[in-house]
Amino acid sequence: MTKKVVTRFAPSPTGFLHIGGARTALFNWLFARHHGGEFRLRIEDTDRKRLTEGAVEAIYDGMSWLGLDHDGEIVSQYARRARHIEVANELLANGKAYHCYCSPEELKEMRERARAEGRPMGYDGRWRDRDPSEAPEGVNPVVRFRSPNEGETTIHDQVQGDVTVANVQLDDMILLRADGSPTYMLSVVVDDHDMGVTHVIRGDDHLTNAARQAQMIKAIGWDLPVYAHIPLIHGPDGAKLSKRHGALGVEAYRDMGYLPSALKNYLIRLGWAHGDDEIMSIEQAIEWFGLDGIGKSPSRFDFTKLENLNGYYIREVESNENLVAICRPLIEKKLERTLSNDEAGLLLTAMDEFKPRAKNINDLAESTLFLFAKRPLTFIPKAEKILSDAARHILADVADLLEKNEDWRITTLETEIKALAEDQDLKLGKIAQPIRASLTGSNVSPGIFDILVWIGKDESLARIRDVAKKLT
Image 1 (cartoon, rainbow, N blue to C red):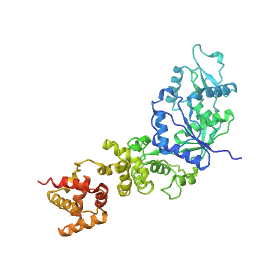
Image 2: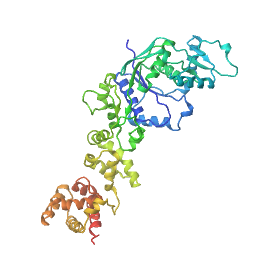
Image 3: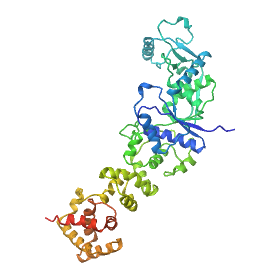
């Protein structure tokens, strides 16, 4: 019988859900969903000194925004410390671990000697075979794993291939500290086993840890999980990803106006491929995802690609209803008031005309503000430049013409404005641009005839006359 696939995402609560962690979570989620398995969430909070207030909530919020739902209860590693200690004591009882009474001074001396001799700065095993009766008084021992010091350990990695480490390179790691608390390395092994994790998919900065953990798993007598170590994300220049490249929290991308669907699509393709497919639904990603599609080289974060993909999702993928729901709070914050139901309805009606120009949600929301603005409007410099005295004279004529209109429809308005342009021997743009500026405060917007209908006759005339009466 085939074992059910179980993956896990195990962040440390030391800050936000950063973009690399989000991709790791996504890959684990996709693999579990592809196989009809489980995706578990574990908070690795054993190091109490590094805990950051609000970090756990930030991780939950980031995953929720991305739509990465987990199965079962969230596991707190710290809450399971009694179980970790139990396993360490079993290793002690079976001779697979031992007490080490080295003082801090001795450990410092070991490191300095190794550095001077050009050797790895590991523990030299001096308490590995000594009788505990030789222990100095007043020293609380740590518990160390008795690592094999001959032969090799090979990790059969699904991304990196076979990775072999000489056992002599791996020193006897600490399982329990002098205060009796379990270490990260022990806790990870025990938790993965107890949670039934079958596949450990994580960053390749954990590759050395995998060899150490595999030794411990074999010593306990448990089955090894399948390992897949993903290359890290680099910046566009090939350097390690930093904040200037985009090593930000997921919430920062939300605040910058990226859609979760677009960010997920971008992260899926950041180090994984399915042929030449660039844009895919989450359903397609689940269907296609496999570890064999993960590349061995670090991927490069590219804001331009993400922005273009986000624009595509705004135009082609997201429903207008969803875009309104996302934009509405941003618009209301800017206006410092709540939109009425009629105004929300207008936003929904007009959304198809605003979407083509937007590359992020903030731009999209900003571009609609003129619909709900109170008079008198403010004008950007390019709009001010359009509104010359000559343009204001034209707008006065436009207002007089439209005042008589009793059929306020796009086709009728277009016919009347075009006729006015012909009468004054002007190109349509010479009239349309001042109308746009007077109605929106900008030089860029959807079509002016749409705008006239959206905001209605009274408001349209009032805005146009506000500008026309400022003749110098």
